[in-house]
Amino acid sequence: MFYKIKEVSIYPITVVLLVLLTSTTHVSADQDEEAIEPYELKQRLEQHKRKTELEHSLQGTLSVMPSREHIDIAAFENYDEFVITVTGKQGFTKQIKNTYGSLDIYDLDLPYDGKYTYEVLGIKYTNEEIADVINNGRGENASTTMAISHKISGQFEIVNGEVLVPKALEEPQPEILPKKNTKTADTFSLFGGKQ
Image (cartoon, rainbow, N blue to C red):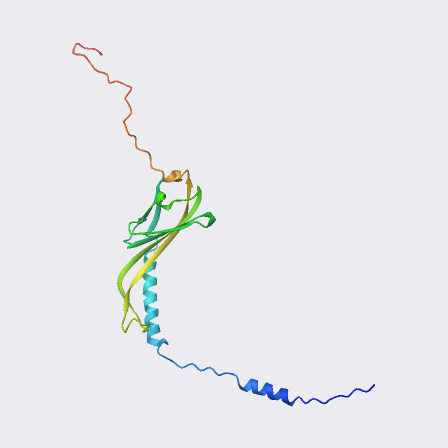
């Protein structure tokens, strides 16, 4: 038995590799109209810094005051809008937007008793304008006003359809009628002595 060995040249393989290596695509970045110029970037950074300063000044201006039927938001700053999101077990989520910062428990239509989580986002619109430094189809020199926000979150518990208020926050229930006075005042007669 004789085997014939055929001589194979590696020349075609090297040519293919060489062609593949030299034919890689070259990417070049040309600056077009949508690229941010250094002065535009500086303006955006200044606007972001200003917004951060304003939002930092809002720290501690929101608190939540629960009562049996409401969750009231005490705001120590004038907010233009409140977005209140309530989440619970089994994927329950409900979001309410209003301008007065109060949430009626019955409007939430909560499916079960138990613990829920709330998140309150207070939004305040300032009169400061944000210049649109990139022409994104809105026209040249387009601007919007800056909105700043502050967020707080916490939990509450529902028992028998009412919010379980901690003892420290409970208000005393007012009495409807005054209690009857059981002791009579001592009265004196005209003739001397007690009646």
